[in-house]
Length: 114
Picture 1 (cartoon, rainbow, N blue to C red):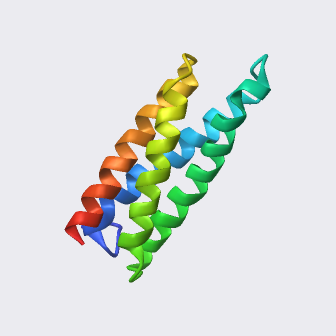
Picture 2: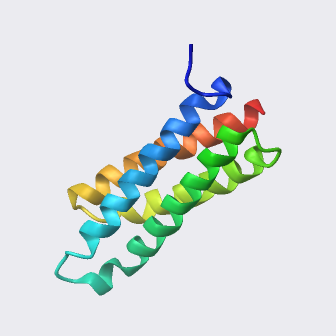
């Protein structure tokens, strides 16, 4: 038995939380880079993405009537974050880009299933 009240959202919720954690890690690591100014967009997108991923997960966990709409927005922000992080060769940026792509895919799949 799943711990989730809405098991149809389980994979997407897990992808959202994993993405939020990767974004938190990436933004923190970016702040330690020598040229922080060069990482400003990456950091800003990481912060937006992490917040939106947590909101999307919460909406799904509650079975919100707006879950599909929030997931569409989450997928768009995840894609933008993945594109930006993908431009940087640091391991934390590459890991974040992968997590963002997985989350975007999960959110789009959830939206089309809703």
